[in-house]
Amino acid sequence: MQDLKLAVLIDADNISPKYVKVILDEAASFGVAACKRIYGDWSDARLKSWKDVLLNNSIIPIQQYSYTTGKNATDSAMIIDAMDLLYAGNVDGFCIVSSDSDFTRLAARLREAGKLVIGMGESKALGPFVKACDQFKYLDLILEHGGSEDASADSTAAAEAAAQVGAGDDTAINRDSICRLVCDMIDEMDDGTGWVRTSRVGDQLIKRYPDFDVRNFGSKSLNKFLASFPVLEVEERTLPNGNPIQFVRVHPQPKKAAPKKQPNQPKVTVIYEDENIAVLYKPTHLLCHSDRTGDANLVDAFTQYLAEKGEYDPHGENRFKPGICNRLDRGTEGLVIAAKSYTALRDMNEIIRTDLLKKEYYTITVGIPQSGRFTAWWEHDEKNNKVSIHAHQSQDERRKQIITDVDVLRTAGPFALCRIGLITGRTHQIRAHLAYLGRPVLGDIKYGNRKMNERTGTKTQALCAVRVSFLDIPEENSLHYLSGKVIKLKDPQIVKQFDALDKSKADGENDHA
Image 1 (tube, helix red, strand yellow):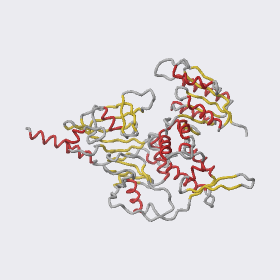
Image 2 (cartoon, one colour; image 1 turned 90 degrees about the vertical axis):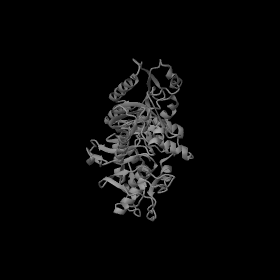
Image 3 (cartoon, rainbow, N blue to C red; image 1 turned 120 degrees about the vertical axis):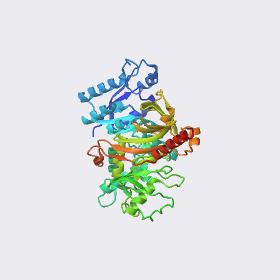
Image 4 (cartoon, rainbow, N blue to C red; image 1 turned 60 degrees about the vertical axis):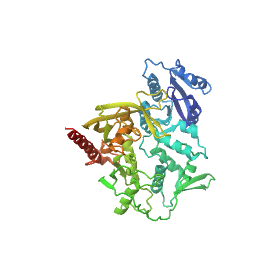
């Protein structure tokens, strides 16, 4: 079989030269790099480090001057050349090497023309660009974790966490979701023996997740990756011609005793429910997922709720445990979406990833903010689990843009009841952004006004997810019927909390009358 001829096009403004060997090795695994070009303004001193590796790797530099500041002419030049190569008909596929989402439409157009499209970039690459490619390779993860089988648990977890960034905060590409998906695939492809070829499973995983790569999880091969799951068994067999072939199946699992209901397990408050999903109310202090504390959590409470209704059998062969699709901080109350099946979880995560779900919050601020839309730059300190907000992007692009809508509904002395709309959704965005604007959330111990928290006796952040709205969901999504649906939390506790502050203010004024 003749090797595919590939065009390797590199965005020098967006990719470091330290990845050059990884880029060429990955391209070689798909075919022959018949064309290797790199684009940038070579008069710029920032690209000097690239010049040392171009000659040794026979990569042709394409000069593209930056005509003005703040504009990237390199992208346009790269897109034009890609289309020229497409219409010339001399290549079978393209390797687009960049983390820039501006190449999303190019990747989609090349695939429409029947060409293989391999994306390569860092784990900061956004989901739309990743999904537009046939496959996407995270260069930083491959370089760092490159498949060492003895990778530490910490490094593997770090790689997995980084792999999720490109697809968005709420996507389910992690070990647990992949395990569930593989189990479902085996059920679908089973010919009656329980065994399925690992190669068929791998093909389906890449179709579902273009950025799936076992190296992101610290493994060298798909077979070893699958064998690392306790619920899966991998077996090698020899064909009549002497060639080995691998199969995978789900281990027959002994029936487990029903989980005991925890004494402090809360009763689930259901705001909306259908055969696929439920929208639940999470009170403050309740965890969304279990953690090392062993405290009650919403997932276990929801599972218990479905078991009592007869919709989930913990003794059965169903390997999917009901789960939640969006998360709230422990101190935040409000609406959380839960999935009853793997299909519902997958499709709801896709809705969230493609920004077809809008979330609205109520909060009480210390100080009265201006109403309007506010933009800033967000940076996460993972070690301390705290974010900082800045007025401008950083040179190393570690900061991410955030956009927050603020609408003041009522005021009471120094306090304001506000409606918050998230245009972007990042960790601690509302709390950190309002604190940056000088109007922190009442009761927030991490970003708030300590003196005012103590004065009012508020020990929990006054933040509540009060509304979720579904936009136009594609028909191929199993949750298409939710299009246009709005689910609200009636009489949220935070409004009563603000009413108490307002009454306290009025009483104080009467005392001084």
